[in-house]
Length: 229
Image 1 (cartoon, rainbow, N blue to C red):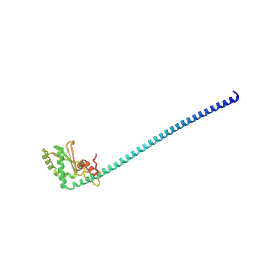
Image 2: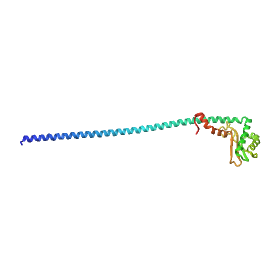
Image 3: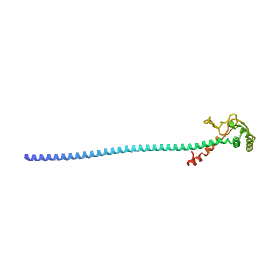
Image 4: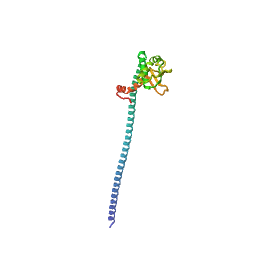
């Protein structure tokens, strides 16, 4: 083999090696490009997922805040409504209390009422001896009906007439300009057993309170369409 043949083979080998190197380089380049694209896609997807999760978290926080704000506003509205209802009901009660003050103004009717209240209290207590407390202004009226009240009670209960002592400690008077915020009594009586263990409060104010509590569900239902709790 002469030098020309040797040179020719060497060139062929060089071309083969170069071609193989180029092909290998292309393969590496393509593989690297694919790996880069895959990694880039994974990074993009991971970032998108992270952004989505952050958005969902913030959206959830916003929804929670909205629910809390709505609940607070709703509760505030309910409180205002309940307060307005209570104010109206209390206003009606105050008006009824003012009307009670007129009851004792009619001495004839009030005297009859005092007797009925005394008899009713005696029937509840069923005690042979009781202590009676009334307003100072009502002592004369009470003394005037005491005997007939004892007699009526004895007939109804089929017992002896009880002993009734009028207490020298009186119920508060009607409210005036000077004691508008102090204790007051619109009228009526309080009877108690001699040992004080049994008490029957039969004042006009106490009876109004009992009647008002009893009628409160009906009042609320008629005024607001709801039943008091």
